[in-house]
Length: 475
Image (cartoon, rainbow, N blue to C red; front, side):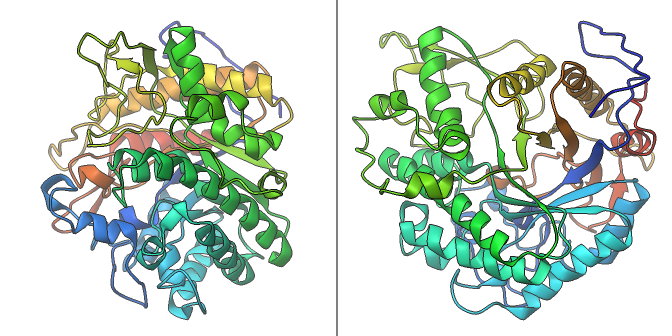
């Protein structure tokens, strides 16, 4: 992929304009099933861990749940028309496992498969590439009752689920993504308790890391057995950009990044990860042959990026700072790294309290390219929550436009520096249920009125639509 006719200003603040992207660079948007679909108890869907978690008092802001969310399930056709009106070239969506198999096992629920078939066919009819994510955090509750991601059985069940979906949609999906951000599923779900299922056990979190990795490998193999087209196979990781003291950075890089990159791309866990976490687990759940199953060839690696982290070793005396960007919870998302603290960073910040630093995205892409130069990359999530306001029937979200402009400039600079980067999916298409934050945080380029469910494209949507159509970064 080459970049031609480039007008590169190269401003230090990443506020460039006029940058031209290759014609085959894919601009799209991304969502997740539980965050937008609603229809939680319709069409044969069973409960997921996020249904249980969000209905548990005190787990989400204001007691919000995804029961209705953005009601995408009932508004599929109009939402597809909205995507087309914005000129999206791809749409990254996730499939609800419990809508396909209510308990995570057994025969397929035809009504669930029919819904996603209508979605995929509707995208193709509008010239939009379908990017399907098999798992975006919504494990069927019945599987959690059996141990969830701490159990090897969940990885085996995931492979069968992948096979079922692949048999129905495997002739039409452009890119199959097995897992979205397994870091969050493992460490926030089983370590800190900030996410569903809300467990707080470091050993369980590390077992979940391995079984998620194993699920990915098994799912890719299952998909390859049944798909009849020539799709791309992928996984999406929220790789952390750590800055600060060297030893703290090394320790957290092993736990957050190399715990996934190592087995997925190199067929081995990093040895320092085992040493760092020896007091938490003996890793006996890694069985002979597992790493060969996990280490499947990938066509593209999905990269999610929002902000950076500043870390150092804690002195054990002063008050420990934990500005890691995640919702406060009773457990730790960093098992074996209790001697590391996360320092506040200079602003500006998004409404999530995350620092805005587009250089972190460029650094991340360049680092991945240096380590894996032959692996194509795609930005599968990047975006920002701000406190949007409707004024005279419009949302003038200048902060979000500025955020996107600066981060897409970073993407272009990585392209110019030789990174094989295939596309960019803005998070998110719609305002939605933002997990533990409920409906308090708005990431969408399209506003959703949660009372009427009316959609209203924000200024950022119009700006992004121009970018998608012209492949030139607007002013």
